[in-house]
Length: 120
Image 1 (cartoon, rainbow, N blue to C red):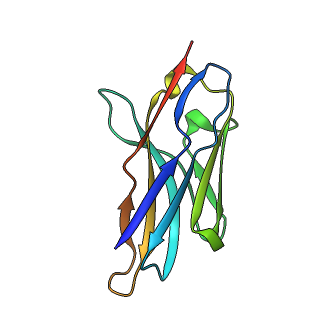
Image 2 (tube, rainbow, N blue to C red):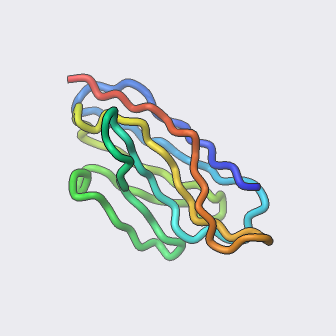
């Protein structure tokens, strides 16, 4: 079994910054991609940013230039530096990892989500 534990959400004023993290633990052989998704009320979950084990990154257009994703492979941890936050960034942010265990290859795992509220 694999667990993803997120931390670093909360309330912040517009223009502020947050740096949430997500640590994966369990029977992990390797982690392919790790990423962050978000879901605002009444909307579908959307990709925010993702990073491969080799360090290649992909961002949603709405966060390019403001958010930076990084990971520590030794710690199985992914970070999302969020700068210049806007009220429209308000959402529940979910960590995602594509994990290979001894039983399964490339399986999707999700964190429980962390709420980020950006006040204007």
